[in-house]
Amino acid sequence: MGNPILEVSHLNSFYTSEGFLRGRKARRSQVLHDVSFTVEEGDIVGLVGESGSGKSTLARCVLGMIKDWNGEIRHHTKYPQMVFQDPFSSLNPAHTVGWILEEALRARKCSAADLDLTDFQEGNSSATASDGKRSSGSAGADSSPLNHAQRQKVVLEMLSRVGLSEGYAKRYPYELSGGQRQRVSIAAAVITRPRFVIADEPVSALDVTIQAQILHLLDDLKDHYRLSYLFISHDLNVIYQICNKVLVMQGGIIVEKGGVEQVYRSPQHEYTKALLKAAE
Amino acid sequence: MKIRKNAYFVTGGILSGILMAVILTGFFWTPYSTTAMNAAEKMKAPSFRHLLGTDNFGRDVFSRVVSGAGTSFLIALMVVAIGCFFGILIGSLCGYYGGIADLVLMRICDTITAFPAILLALVIISVVGGGSGNIVIALGILFIPSFARVVRTQFAVCRSQNYISSAKLMGVSGPRILFFHILPNTFSVLLPSVTIGFNNAVLAEAGMSFLGIGIQPPQASLGSMLKDSQTYLRSAPWYALGTGLAVVLLVLAFSLLSEGIQQGSRRQ
Image (tube, rainbow over all chains, first blue to last red; front, top):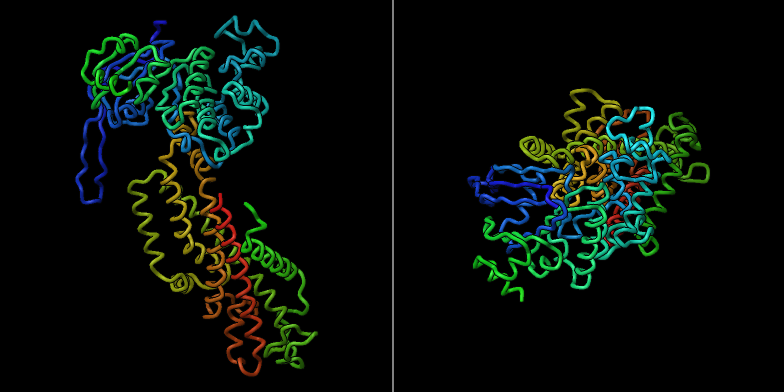
């Protein structure tokens, strides 16, 4: 606890409506106003607000998908990942689940060391002790990218960790249910062992029983991989179930932030009170 | 894809399979020489010796049809290959990156499609000269826009999908996203347009040869044979009939196949 994972300060973000060659003038409007918050190690920070309040914009700014912003976004971990709301558009329909998961490992050229895979270290336990000063002779096994067979092994392990059997590796996304797809999306986000994941409404497209399973899975992965989440939702009940901190956003402004219990017990801002009332 | 219930796919597949077998055989062996003339056998009606009869020079029509179909097939194949390759390249870059280059290239494509392909090919051929190599290049260029447009649309749709955002976050490189993540998603629309393009190429080549700017005699070509047979439509109807039938079969087979593929991919 306490180590910052992500620090955002005074973030302003803008959206420019398309105007080129369409007879309209391009209009640049501000979406986020002076947003500041910190995600610390082990946090699950909930971001709640109505549609259009700028929740997803914030996520996209943080992950660099939107370029038009000023302020400061400081990541303290490498390669943050994201889980999307719509489980049907977040998996490539042309590829199998196994291929999609393996692609993440391929793209980063992940080595056994990147993934903390002790069982791939060919019985040479001293290699990890002398961190950083490993001679090229003994480095070999764990700092070189995994080969195909090793990646396959990691993929199957990951699948079983998100509660899917090995057979799913050969299936195509359209053969899976919404909940199964979301499990695969989560697996794809987590397989490269990021320390920070943004989950953008990961359960709002799912029915209530599946919601509970996915929330449980996220919690389980958090402990296992020492993850921190920024968890976006419009549903305060979901936030209450999983988060320890909460940011309440309205019209691109964070109107209230604090521990989830504190915000629940004694909301300060009118908007938070209204949201709580609506969630009852 | 449930192949058994797909009548188009089955008939198209069988028909093009037979044609392919005949054409492939024709590359190595035909019953008679396709160019040797024989004054004694002029204008003979179809018989067991000459399945489709003989023409005004005493050449076996069947042998010439097979060989001409082979030429058309090869030319169409290369035309589609050129069109497809550059179409995919241009379409993917335009669709994915957009911007000014996309705007300019797509307007050029519109301009090219505004003219009939044969007319433009005629212009190109009259500038650079005839020969099957030039026909392939001319038609190939003219076939680029149709593929580029199909590919571009698919890429423009796919680039904003979450799975592409997700691939970017995973650190997948640009070219890999283009050709391994998006391109496979265009196959379902690309495949039918390849078969349709193939048909158009067969017809374009036949049309050009018919007008005398395509394959030059004495090499057999369906188009130039149709032109020659016109003169003997009354005295030797088998000449035109056999040749025309070959064109129809060639186009029909691939049309059925294309329709079958489209139906199959729609079911998914």
